Each structure stands twice: as structure tokens, then as C-alpha cells.
Amino acid sequence: MPELPDLEVICEYLRPRLLGAEVAAVQIRRPIIVRDLIGEPLAGRRFTDVTRRGKFLLMALDGNVTMVLNPMLAGRLRYGEPLARDRVRDAVVILLTDGLELRYHDAADMGKLYLTGDPERVPGFAGMGPEANDPDLTLERFHVRLRRFRGEIKGVLTDQAFVAGIGNAYSDEICWSARIYPFRRRADLSANEIAVLYEAMRAVLAEATATLRVRVGSAIEVEIRDFLAVHGKVGQPCPRCGSTISRVSLARSSTDFCRTCQPGLMIERRRGTKRPGSQTQDGR
Image: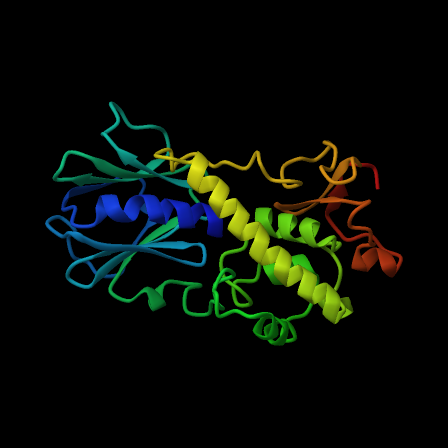
């Protein structure tokens, strides 16, 4: 799932290339992806801006129209010369008058592309908290906001109403960097641990964005995660202590962490029960 660092770099790549580009035609290959809230053609319109908000990418066109993309789990954008033939699950192709194309591909059919005059109408958009990398989000503001949320700290980090832009992958990285067990209850964190968590959040997101700026280049459709410390590394040695990285899976979500660097017990296990549907890949 593209998160703040991924979308930040995609936005930086697309903005100078799309500004002023004119839409020649739009081909909707998978209508299930598109939510047209304006009912007006895009052909003839020019791109005026490309921005990011949380895990949404916003591509503004003249005439007060914005394409708001929520790529969800598997959505990917490709910009460049037209492909010789369509791929399975190519959902939307935007042909430009300069001969290039912007193509949205979604292997899971979970993402959505909204055409709207007001991004606030897009589900999940209006209720977002401040950006996780917002310079105005000080430690004091972070601490105050954190008091409003309950539950496990990983779940709080991924709640877009708390801070915007963090998903499953980078919440794993932030908790590992802060040496905090991802299933710790928010209320159990000390003031010092909250400060460490805040600094880890800022550092992890900044370092990941810097890494992706160097490595992504024009291949914005490729998700690069091999540089992460624990996410996606189940069974491999922790880069800090050498212990085997564990994974806890619940429903369609998974959490990767180091039991040595991030010791703790799941909330339900403290009460003598095992969380329904949970599985571990290290036998514990």
C-alpha cells in the first residue's frame, strides 16, 4: 500500500511533468475503480497541480476538477510512453496531447479514482488529522492528539484521524525504531516513550522519503520496500540485535516486529486468551 513516503516521491515526480499537460482522452477499462462526481468530460482540460494529502494523490485540472486517487492496497500509477498493449487490471488510461499517458493499474481492484470539484466529498478525506511529517506537528501537539485515541499504538498510528499518511508498513518501522511493542496500549506509554515514538515517526518517514527519492526515479509504479528494517522481513535477522523477526497476522493485516527489541504481550493474552483469528509465524 503506498504510504506517505511513496506518495510524496510520486507527487514530486509527476508535478513538473503534468503541469500544463492537456488531456486528450480518458479510457476507463475497469469502471468499478472510478467514482465520477462531476459528470463532465476531462478531455481538453489541463493539469494545474499535483499534491498529496495523507494517502491520497490529488491531480487538479482547470475548470475546478480534481482527480483524487486512493490507491489502497495494490494501486499503482505509471507515466510515460504508451504501452503497446494493456495489462490485466489496467483500470484507467489518461492519454495526453503530448503523446504520453498516465495509467492506473490495480491488481486488487480495491483503489478508487474520484473525479470531483470538492475533495472533501471523497470518503475518508475530510476527517484526516495533520500530516505525519507536518513541521507544525510538534511533540506537544502530537502528545495532546494522542490522548484522544485508545487501543494499541500501531492501530493509533495507522488511524488517519490521528495523523495522516502512515499505513501498515511504516507503522511497523516506526514502532521498531522506537523499540515499542506494536500491541502496547496507548494509555500504557510513558511521556518519555511518546517522545521517542514521535522522534521515530519523524525520522523514519524522512529517511524513507530521502531513500525513495534516490531509488524510484521514473519507475513510480514500482513499490520499493527492501530497505525497511522489519516490515516484510519475517524470518530474517533483526538488523539491530540479530533475533528473528516475527509476524502476527490478523484478518488481512500483518505486523512485523522484533520480540527482543520490542518485548511485550498482546492485550488479549494478558487476560489469558488468544486474539481470535491471530496467527504468528514464529510459534508464539
